[in-house]
Amino acid sequence: MTHTIRPIEPRDLDAARDLLRQLTGWEMTPAEMQSRLDFVAASPIDWLFVCEIAGDVVGLLGFRLRERIEHPSRHGEVSVLVTDARVKRQGVGRALLAFAEDFARDQGCVGMFLVSGFKRKDEAHRFYQALGYEITGNRFVKAFD
Image 1: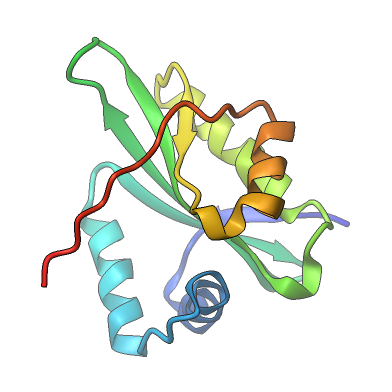
Image 2: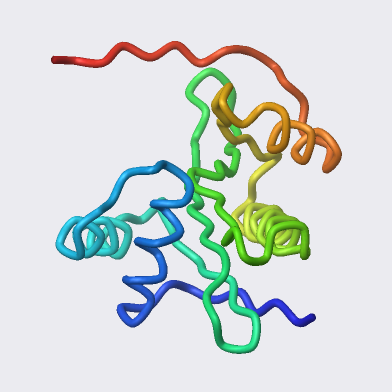
């Protein structure tokens, strides 16, 4: 099965919305998704990529460059990684992560990181650890009302 990874295009808007709904459970409107595409297009540090199998969009990767303030280096951040439920365990996530790592190297990054919630620890965390990622800390979040 051949995975084709390419930058997101406007024609991918509905597929991206569906993938993000699968990831978050939240239904994004077309206008909201378009605003995310516009944001990424205007950002010098953010990219969105899709993975296709036989022309069908089955994965989404958000990538961000992170400059470290405390050390003169940069890391790549996987800001979004989602595989369509129809093709789980068929190498899409692995292909997207490998692509992200190569892209990060091309951008001069010395490493990669990502954040994954506790709800996904049984499946996703094992997947990341199997690919060499280590748990190095906790993320603290405060929501504003």
